[in-house]
Amino acid sequence: MIEIKEVSKTYDDHKALESLTLSIKEGEVFGMVGTNGAGKTTLLRILCGILRPDAGEIRIDEMPVWDNPAAKQTFFFVSEEPYFFANCRAGHMAKYFAGVYPDFSMEEFHRLMERFGLDEKRRVNGFSKGMKRQLAILLGLCSHTKYLFCDETFDGLDPVMRQAAKSLMAQAMEDRGLTTVMTSHNLRELEDICDHVGLLHQGGVLLSKDLEDLKIGVQKVQAVFESDEARAAVEEKLNQMDHRTQGRLHVYTVRQNAEEIEEIFGAAEVLWYEILPLTLEEIFICETEVAGYDIQKIIGE
Image 1 (cartoon, one colour):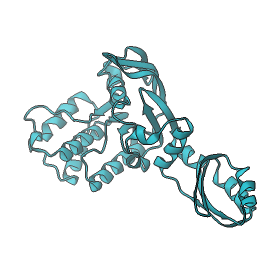
Image 2 (cartoon, helix red, strand yellow; image 1 turned 90 degrees about the vertical axis):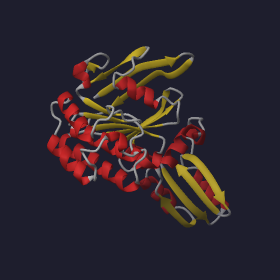
Image 3 (cartoon, one colour; image 1 turned 180 degrees about the vertical axis):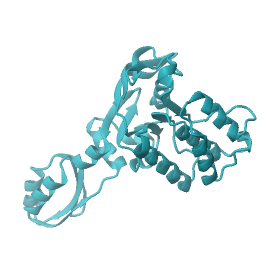
Image 4 (cartoon, one colour; image 1 turned 120 degrees about the vertical axis):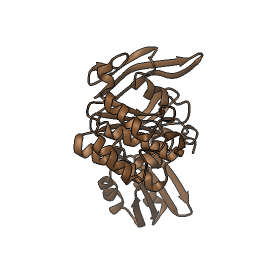
């Protein structure tokens, strides 16, 4: 388990993180979203022991991370700009990490490099950005650490390679209980892989919830009522987060489960109604607007 307690970090006069507290459970994919300056990369670098917090602490499996080799053995960090030794070949990087991580699997590395069409004998500085990202992810997975930290995880990967990388992560979770922490600007990118999502804003956590709980607890309903009286009667029973109209069509976003919505609208005088699935982005928009924030400005969409 990863425990982040009251962590703060300041660069000159800029507060990158301020009293940030967060827990990340084992065996899940935790996605962090937010714009540049929200604190995602700073948090990951403190999590990895690259940066030291000004205040607070981070513990991985009850071990402090800073200046602790034992804690650092538990994770692999794929940075936004993966670092490789000058003029090295892909296979050389694998041999290096095999010396760092005792459970590194060279057999798995050979197999995955062939599967991804990457040449182990080729110099890494001749790889494209996407190929370097693929190599970094494969090295991380083959290290067989308990945790994998990824900054802008799928940046530079084409759709096919993104899906392949997600599949490998999912398989590692199933096979050995891998816990993955990843950052992204893109909510849609994280929706099909994350179990838990945290929204960082101005150095703090604005929202942190299980994705399934988010989706179960918030619904979108569109309906056409027989009369204004019928509409008013229904609205008295709704826990509304948002209400929009297009002519006679009313569209509600409500904090209630689907069974409650079916019961309310099923007994109402409506000409037609429909419960629609919500995307992660739509859920965040509603949750953050209720908290008084403009999500469009926060995530830069």
